[in-house]
Amino acid sequence: MIEETVTPVDQFQAPFGREVIIQDVLHESGMRMLRIRIREGKRFTVMDVDAATASHWSSVLAHWVEQTGQPNK
Image 1 (cartoon, rainbow, N blue to C red):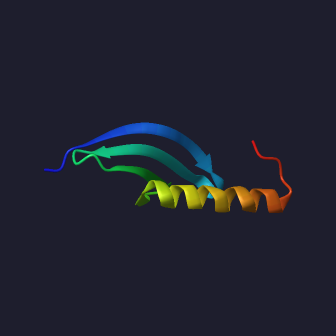
Image 2: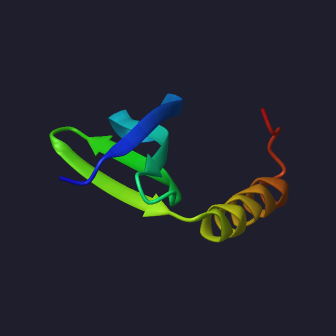
């Protein structure tokens, strides 16, 4: 069995009853991933991303927030 150390990063509610859980996952090989878990009722979507993907995703999200003109919390 593959061992991994999972550390909670954040958890929050999103629109339409969704729950988002973000975790830091360190695999026994030393590989580190960011795990995004989205719960929609009884369904889960789980996505593990590397640092480059997380960085790109965060910049796209930040840009979108700036374009909406809404305050960034």
